[in-house]
Image 1 (spheres, helix red, strand yellow):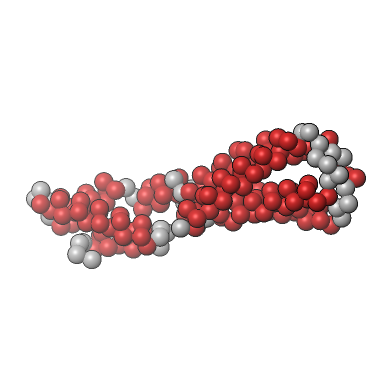
Image 2 (tube, rainbow, N blue to C red):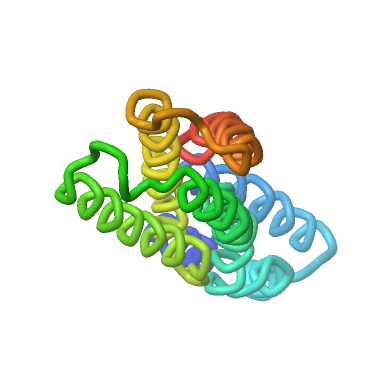
Length: 190
């Protein structure tokens, strides 16, 4: 780097915790700030300390990235809307007497276990504060929820004797959630 060892150490700490492209962008701004402080007459070490103080500690910078991470936002949105969609499905399945459908108990158990795992992954991503990698679990949880929604839709199509009228709300809710979640996955993984 064409800067100061304090800046190099600071950027090395960020590089351990953030993606390389984010660190490169931060490095440009940090070095520009350091050069600006040097041009204002500060000695190299003081200019480096002032530039770093202006940017914030490494923990503060990482927390800011985590707070605005797409995976965290998506996980929070899915967790917030999940109970409503689940309630719609619950009412629809009870109205359609799901217990009479030809679906093996093992399939129901696997679906429930997968749902619990997906919710856990989303909760980890949604509550992340210091790890950008944890927010990426939002993509895994979001993908799992898309598959669960599609599985539920296929089950209704293939196993239900006919959709009960309450499902007329659950089906579009799941389709909307699938579409919106699928749109965010490339952003999270990007």
